[in-house]
Image (tube, rainbow, N blue to C red; front, side, top):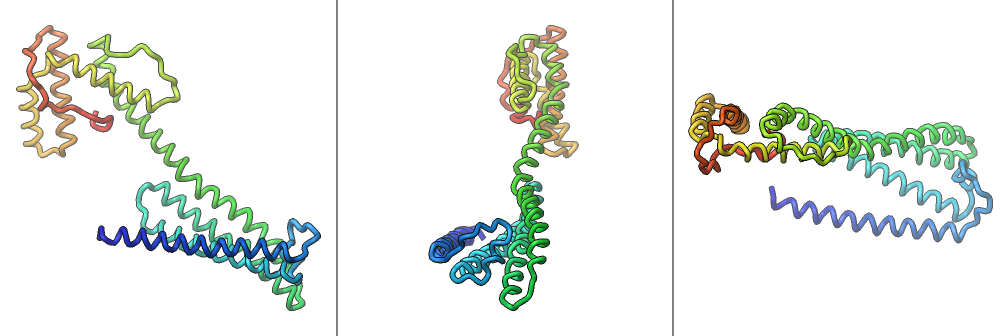
Length: 279
């Protein structure tokens, strides 16, 4: 399976180069046809229908509408395939689903124009199709595409912020206990109220400083006994580590309050939380 990943990447690069070449030629063709044709009147709403029978301008319109419709189909299919394979992050999957709708609605922008042009060629008046469906689909397409691109960024940011706030609050009880026991542990420098990430990082650092200050009161024998008990209870590794650390810290705080200092030993085997999740 890993050997197929470079092949897929190489294939994707080949497809990208082909698309760049094709659409580069399309852009060149659009510019060439527009310069060679005559479109003296500025038509902001019904340009395609108004010049449906004008030589060269007609071909230019068909060229860019075809490129637009093909691009909409390809983008819809790619987003659908990607959304089907994405599980996490969930905001990316939701954004892709909105992009599927947005790019799909792009067909409602191009196809009514083609229908109105065909109506002009066959002697029918299908301008209402272009006027009504185009305006509705253009608005909806813009809305869903905008939401599809912005939702993963905004949603991901809000989810990270919520996780940081939750971690900051969960660290509160341990931080306050250590702060009361070791007054010099807390830094006096203020942190902006909105910088939750920095506040969380500083709280973790201060808790680690508090743990270091309690080293003379930590019992290695108690840590070993607590680890054996956690193993007997068949706890998960993270939960067992947290349980052992809680027991050792509670005992160290009690010893410090009583002034019962132990000989300073190497406690490198004792649990040392390295993240807010473990703390």
